[in-house]
View 1 (cartoon, rainbow, N blue to C red):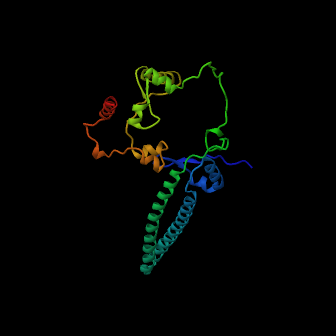
View 2 (cartoon, rainbow, N blue to C red):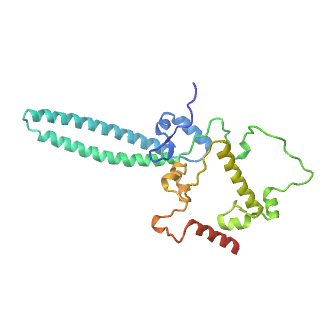
View 3 (cartoon, helix red, strand yellow):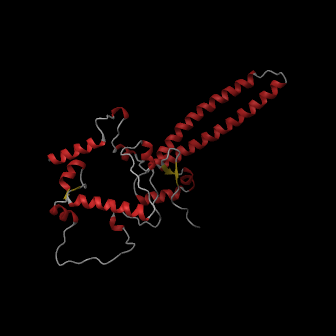
Length: 263
């Protein structure tokens, strides 16, 4: 028996991408297996519990709507005969009140369920090697021949720092470890590579060049897969009331450059 495709992602109405709860529900064992291979702790049990509760509530709402429709139809028939319908109307009112209450609870529950689904990442393909670190990686293919030297070669950080085109120390003060500042020919090379990539793809491969805004809203972050709470908390938030015409993005960049030069 062929195993199901382990993707199961859908686009939510707000544009964010998450696992399809129907896929998780139908292939729960597969989802558990693939997430275990990926590593990490994911709230699958909580998702299943809330999904079961939501389905039960949805069925209850559907049943109540059916009863309300039948009662309303019966009221219409009774009215045509001149009979008293006070009791039936009271019943319909009570059913409608319960439906409204359950719909609100179901809405909140669905939001919680979607929030959990947003926190669950993509499922790795079954062909991906399972391992704790890069030592478990499998070589897929090799191109060309690795050069050999009769001396101990330097890595790109050592070469770039010696040439004065790479500054790791000042970058760590501005942005943290593992960042770099490209200077002089290094910055020129980066800009040239960007232009080369844009020119190749727009002129030869049918792409359209776009310059988007530098700031985005929450829905856009979700839409690009920025769904985890930890990641969202690490992204600076700018409230509209705090935006000032005297502090455009260029001013922020200038402030960083002044700090860099001061160091």
